Length: 80
Image (tube, rainbow, N blue to C red; front, side, top):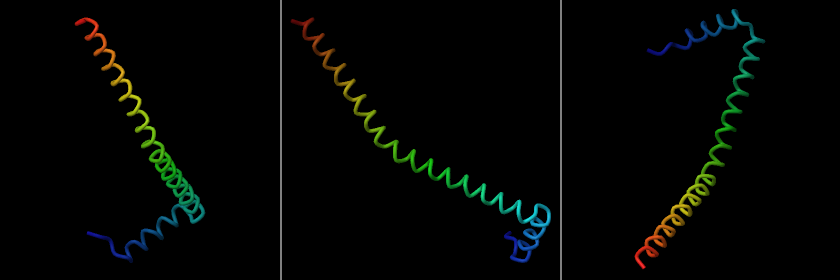
C-alpha cells in the first residue's frame, strides 16, 4: 500500500516544521557527501582488487610449481 502524493506532502511539511529547512539542507549535504565517498571507495577498491588478485594468484602458482619441482627432485634423488 503506497502513500499518495498528498500524504507524502503532509509528511514532508511536518518534517520541515519539526527540523527546519536549514537543518534538513545540512543533513542532505552530509548524506550526499557520505554516499559520494562510499561510491569512490567502492570504485577504488574494485579497481585495485583484480590486478592485486591476479598478482597474488601468480605468486601462489609459482610457489606451488617450485614446491612440486623440489619434491620431484627429491624423489628422483632417492630412487637413483
